[in-house]
Length: 349
Image (tube, rainbow, N blue to C red):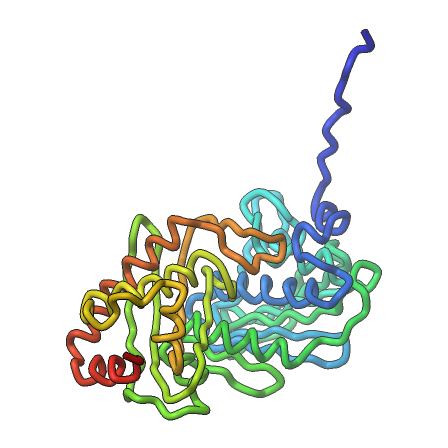
C-alpha cells in the first residue's frame, strides 16, 4: 500500500498571511466592503489602545484615508530586538499583537504613514505593503498627544472602489452609540451619543411622536453575557430595531430573538389577562407598532451563522437577553403605571 504522508507546514512570516489570504481578515475584497472593514478594525484598535481619547476623525481625500485621535499616542519606545514598538505594531500579524487592525491595515495598504504626538515630541514612520520603508524618526516638537494614520489601499488586492461616505457615516454613528464618551467625525460631520443606546433610540424614532419622554433603559449580566437594551414607544406603525454584538452591528439572530422574548415576558407579567390567548407569532403585531428597540450584547467569543457575521447563533445569548430584558422592562413599566396603561390601551381586544 502506498504510504500516505503529509507535506511540511509552511509558516508565513510577518504580514504575508494577510496579503496571501486577505479574505480571512477583512472579508470580500471585490465589493468595497473589505476596505471598510479594514478601516473600522484599525479604528477599533486605536480606540482600544487610547482610552483617554475624546474623538476619532476620519477624512477621505480621493483614495487616501486619514484617521486621527487625541489619545496618548502609539508607543514609540524601543523593543528588546531594537525596533520601535510602533514598527512592531504595524509589521507583526501574530503573537502579542494578534487580532489588531494595525498589521492588517499595513499589509493591505500600498502605503501607510503613521504620525505620533507623544511626550512633547512628534514622530513619523512609513510602511508599504506591510514593510517599514523608513525608520521611526523624530519630526519636531508637539503641543498635543495623539495618533494620525494616512493610508492608500493596495488596489492589487482590493478592487478599486471609492470610499462610501454614507456607509462611513452610518458606521460612525454606530460607534458613537457603542462608545458614549467619544465623538466620531467623518468629513467634518460629528456623531455623538452621550447616552448610548438611549440616544440612538431617539434618533431612530425621530420622525414620530414619542408617547413617553425618555427611552427606557435596562442592563445586566447573565452567565457572563453583558446585555444593554433601550426602548422607546412612538405613535408610528411599525417596529424599528438595532442590534449589536460587541463592537459590530449584527442585525439578526439570538440577541434580537431574546429581545422580543423579553418584551413579551415583561408585559405578560404585568398584564397576564390582557395578553392571554395572544400567540407568540402574533405578539409582535400586537405590541410592536411604534416600538423602537435596541440591544447590545457583549460576549467573549461570538458565533455566527454566516461568513458575513450578520446572524448571531448563540442560544445562551437569547436566554440571557430574555432574562435581563424581562426583569428590567417589567420593573421600569411597573414603576411607570401611566405608560403601561397607555401601552395596554394601544392593544386590540
